[in-house]
Amino acid sequence: MRIVKNTKIDFIKYFKSAIALSAILILTGVFSLISNKGPKLSIDFNGGTLIAVQYNKEINLNSIRTALKEIEINGQIFDFSKSEIKNFGNTAAVSLRIANLEKEPENFSESLINILKQIYPNNIPDNLDDFVLSIEKVGPKIGSELSGKALMAIVYAILLILIYISIRFEFIYAIGAIAAIFHDVIITLGIFSILGYEISLAIIAAFLTIVGYSLNDTIVIFDRIRENMKTLKRQDVSEIVNQSINESLSRTVVTSLTTLFVVLTLYLFGGNVLQYFSFAMIIGVLVGTYSSIFIASNIVVYMNKKS
Image 1: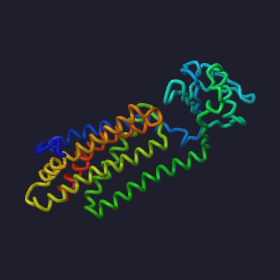
Image 2: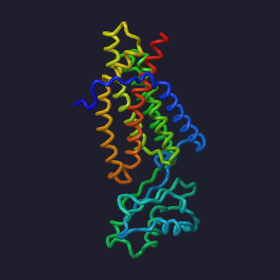
Image 3: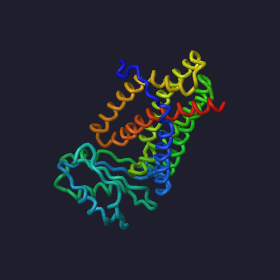
């Protein structure tokens, strides 16, 4: 299906403006990351405890924060009022994330669950097994190992992409594709930093998905550029790239809109569990489509002219 036919948009004319826009987005994100001393990492990487409970009725989160401001567990006083406390799924389900404690008391999770029961004793399910939905604990050592593995997963993906595109196309195209991937990931990471969203294992999976999506879109355009390079040898490289983008535009728009509708539906109706993952994918789809047209292709034009 072609919803965009016979376009003759002069994308080359907007390349400088696109580079300026990308520079602003990247610098803003990098400034946020520096001022926040890096991205906000979840307990997947920092270590900590996640407890999810289900009450019978709607719960006021502010009441829970107030009750957790000063609690005693095994003789130690804690203030968890500033921890991440939120609803998920419905207003009766509550999740509590607590960062790793240096001197965590024995049976810490069980003691904290008993305190949550005492806050709303009349709203506890008859079957106490239905109250506790999940208890997750991640130690600091495991969190550190996960951080290293997540970083290496991204590095390996980028290296393999560099090798693959260099073999299938040329090294010039590989540089354009890698630049677009870095562009997409850094902008998405910067937006997460600006909004104060946590980076979890699910978000790392979203970043890897964004890498694959952006690469797929970029390769379609590169393939058209390569074919036109063979048949339109007398034309300037800028004209060939511009024509190639226009010829691929219908496919790019259809693919991007289809993917965007899916992740937007996940964001609106998928609940808190999928909210941050789907948000990352929304940003990734929009920025990935943009970078395939204005970043990767622009680098191919620039490097072809230099060579």
